[in-house]
Amino acid sequence: MAINATITMTLDFMVAGSIFFVDISIAMLMLSLAVFTVAFPIWFYRHSRGLWIGIIYLTGSMFED
View (cartoon, rainbow, N blue to C red):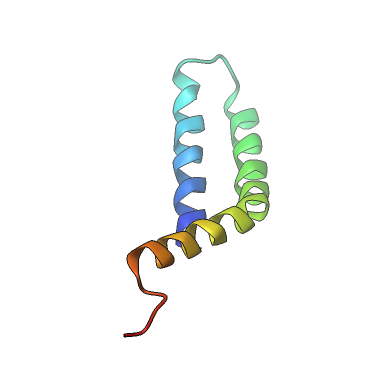
C-alpha cells in the first residue's frame, strides 16, 4: 500500500506542477487529478503488490533463519 500511495502522490505532484507549463484551468486540473487519484491506485494495485513481494524476496525477509 505504501508503494501504491507513494507512486500515486508522486505522479499527482508532477501533474499538478505542470500547471505552470500548460494553459489549463484550475477546475479542469482539479477534476482530472481527482479522477486520476482514485483510478490509478485501483489499476496499479497488482503491480504494487508485485513490487512489494520482489522487495521482500530480494531483502531476504521471506525466509526465516
